Image (spheres, one colour):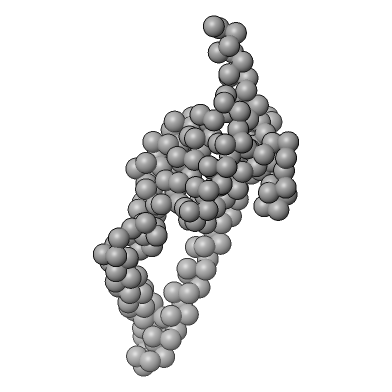
Length: 204
């Protein structure tokens, strides 16, 4: 019995090593992978979940589990649970799934952002009421951001005699767009840095 348990652990480490080795490959290269097919499909599923495409992520993970060896399936199922929780904006389930994978759970800020996204952009499986609520919240958010942008522009223009409402709204919109673009760029850089750190960690 003990040798069998050891073999299972070795197989799981092998699956994880294959996933880590394939992380830098393109989607086309992963789709064409034959030696580590299960690992390649699992990575494609994880990438689909990052695009919040739950349907495609589920399809990839189903194929990955079918192609995996019995010793690898538990780990891939855990990856699927975490990825689908992300794709479907289920913050609480995501935290538990990531912990079962033995990884650091998302920070409180990331969990808050995912919950907010779940309200604004509910998954396709959500009901009609959730989608209508999301549309109304997006409209409200746009109005609030425009009001904040207009307020900042009016405040800046006060020493120069103020500015009209129409030009103020336009400049406020531009200001909000710039701020949002900067936040997106910073978020992507942090995500890429985290991926690079995670990929380099096992080799150290």
